[in-house]
Image (tube, rainbow over all chains, first blue to last red; front, side, top):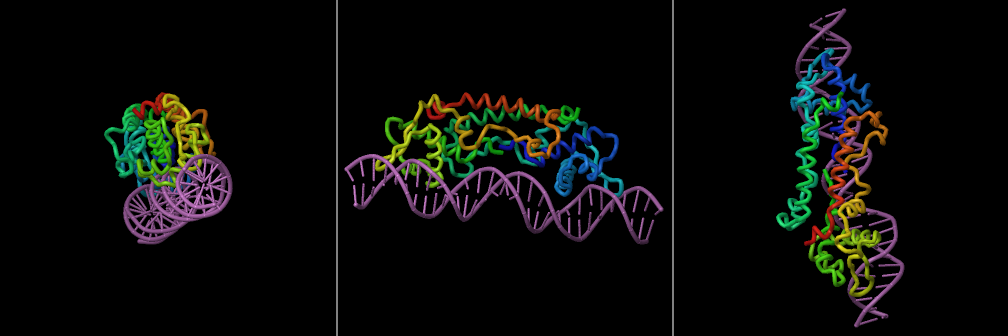
Length: 132
Length: 132
DNA sequence: GACAAATGATACTATTAATGTATCATAATG
DNA sequence: CATTATGATACATTAATAGTATCATTTGTC
């Protein structure tokens, strides 16, 4: 199963590097060298981070990215939801009209409480903790 | 994300029905009617449950399946691992030779502790609880 | 102002995992 | 011995993930 997909993972690694060099602009070229991930894919990821206000971008020569917030304010949950959509451990089949009974479903109840537990844990994790 | 995939989910629903009728043999035909899931897919699932000693099968006319164990002894974690492989919240990219540093990875450490938490919770859930 | 080096926007392709099908063999019951 | 069930196994489809490609726009430097 994938709690964290590759684009989220790459984004974290990129952000860690940017956080560790937060006084200057970091370019995609530099990040590709540092992380060894595919350039076009990384570019797409950085763009999304920029659109979502996590990175600030600088166009043109010597351009690149800087953090738009303090590392303490960048949450793992936010990153996951940026790339993977709203946090859900398991989509209920009820919604896909396969499982008939949402309300009485004991499994659903168990999963919901588990989901809450996991979400609360993830909420606490920030870039600051990951980049030290 | 999918903590529980469709075959695990179908298996649970099938087992619930079988558990509720545990004094008699239940056929695939009956389960298809009851659950409304694709027959060939369900057959494959029931076969796997049988191979793994969760169901006992009866071949031939009037054949079908019965529980091979008490509902109290059938764990959600076992079902998940039967259909989805060893429980892992997120496969480490280190193993795929993409991420260079397994040991120093702070994210990995966080995920590992989260994984333990979730696994322990899932370990406690049995068919008995789900089929009441 | 022209060029180079960067990001912005966006459409497309490939790969993998999940989901579902099909077929033939074998066994048990009446 | 026909019918109805499971056993074994190969195949096909769909959806999600992962990755590519292309052209436009912006900015610094000569």
